[in-house]
Image (cartoon, rainbow, N blue to C red; front, side):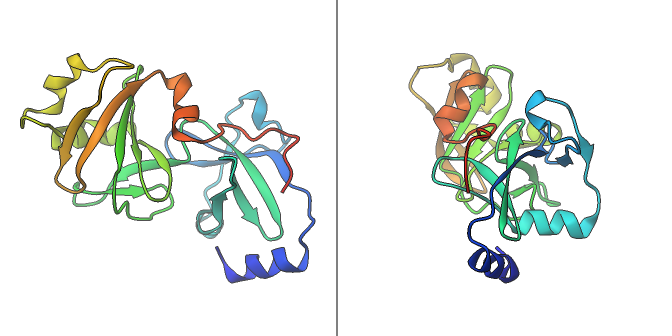
Length: 200
C-alpha cells in the first residue's frame, strides 16, 4: 500500500467506507459504476487510465472478513468480485502466473475446478481465477500424479471426492479439488460483494 495512503488513513481514520462504485470482472478489468449500483449486476464502465489502474492495484487489499477493497486515500471502496479476488494470466514466457495487478504468483497451495470448467489457484496473495484464454495452455502444463496429462484424469474428479495431486513445473505439487462455482467464495474465503452495511 502506498505510503501516502497509509498517511491519509492515519490522518482521517473514521472516513465511512464506500460501496457500489467499483467491480472487478472475470477478465481482471476494474470497472467503475457511476451511479453506485454495482450490486445490481451491471457491467459498469471500464477504467483504462494507466495511472489509475496502477494506483488501484497497489492499494488493493482485503479485511479479516474476506471483503476486498481499494483503499482510496482514507476511504475503503469495497468491490463486487465477478469471479475471484485475483484474475491470473500466464506471463510472457507462458510458464508462470501473474495477477491482474501484475504481481508474480510465487506459489500455488491448491487448485480448484468449478462446475463451469474454470480453474482457480490459491496463492500467497489470495485466491484467483485463471483467465479463460490462458486456461488451455496452463492445463497442458499440469500433470496427474502418474504423469498423465491432467485433462485425461479429470473424469475421475467430482465434488466431495478426494483431491487429485497435480504437478506443475512452476509450482510443484498441489491438490486439485472440484466444487460448484456458487460454493467457491465460501470455500476460498472471500465475499463476492461486501454488504452495504459493512464499515471500514
